[in-house]
Structures are given as structure tokens and as C-alpha cells.
Image 1 (tube, rainbow, N blue to C red):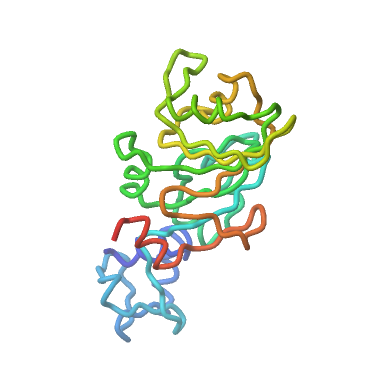
Image 2: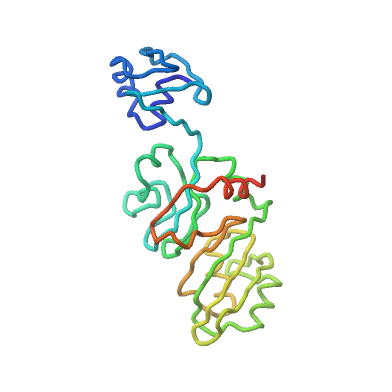
Length: 236
């Protein structure tokens, strides 16, 4: 990898900024000064330093966010605040993106990464990756709804959903439930309850595949995945 690309990717500024940095003689690879921006280094095996500090190269980042309401699941928007806006610059420089979408008013687990291959695996309709949500429902959720969801319900556009697992936590005029689905249609959980004449008033994603929301994360907070979580996510 060219040294200017590596340093630019790791947040040392634009290519122009990096050229100035290289000319200053403060960049070294294996204790040898590098001034030529076109020179190649091995980001894994070579020790690159700037002002004596080792540059820790990472190709991919994997972040778990507890998405707050009022923020959209997008990389950029001219009007709305996005989940990427909530990231520190040290993570923004990797140009990450949210894996799938949570509605603006929905909270909970959101995976943010720049690993396109992993994102594709998690979002592929053929993979049937499960997603579990906690929801508060306006209206009494009954065993009849549990059976209907297990069969699959017909949405407003005529699409019949795949079977979903519905668990009633508390039933009443305002019910509390957990639901696990294996597809990701637009506003799917909300539309599934509309199909049985009920309304979702609060929605939180708890898990995606083997990845569970870290309950210690406050709304809007995020952290990098642990090696164990990443291995589970990648099926290793």
C-alpha cells in the first residue's frame, strides 16, 4: 500500500496534508525515514511511525451503537442528523455505514462498519438473519396474534411475511412483546401489527443474528465489537 494512502486512511489528513508530513521527515517505516509519497509499505508487517508514534493500521472497523430516536440510519443527510454524525472523527475516517436501517423513531442495536462483504452477508434475503425487537403495542396482543405471526401475515401491499416468533411479555390495552423476524421489509414490524389492527408505539432492536445489544450502552453511545462478537458474527 502506498504510504500516502495508508496515512490518509488513518486520519492524517488529505493526500496534500500527508505530502507535507512526509517532506517534514517525521514519517518512518522500520526506522527509515520515508519522504516519497509513492513509496509502498506493508501495513501489517512494517512498523510505520509518525513523530515516533506507531500507526496502528486497521482495514475494517466494526461498531455497535445503541441508536437513539430522532437520528436516521444513513451516512449523510442535508437536513437530518445521521448515525455517522454521532461517531468520533477517528471512526468517521473509515467511511463506515449502517448495516441495514432502523426507522428514525426506533432505538437499539445498530451495526456500523466499512466491511461491505460482512454487510452483504447479514442483509442478504437468502441468509434469513434473525432480528429480535422489543415493542410496546397499542392494543391487546393475544395468542391468536402469536399464531397468525407464526403462519405469516399479509402486509398492506399484499406481501405475505415469513413466519415470525411473537412472545407476549405483558398483555393489555398497552401490550409488551418481543418479536423475532428473519427478513427486513420496510417498516416490517410496524406493518405486521397493523395487519392485525394494532399499532407499535415503541420499538427497540435487541439483537441481529448472534449479536446482542450491550445493555451498558446509553442511547447514542457506541463501542467497537469484541473479537468474540466479531467471530460470532462472521460464523467463525
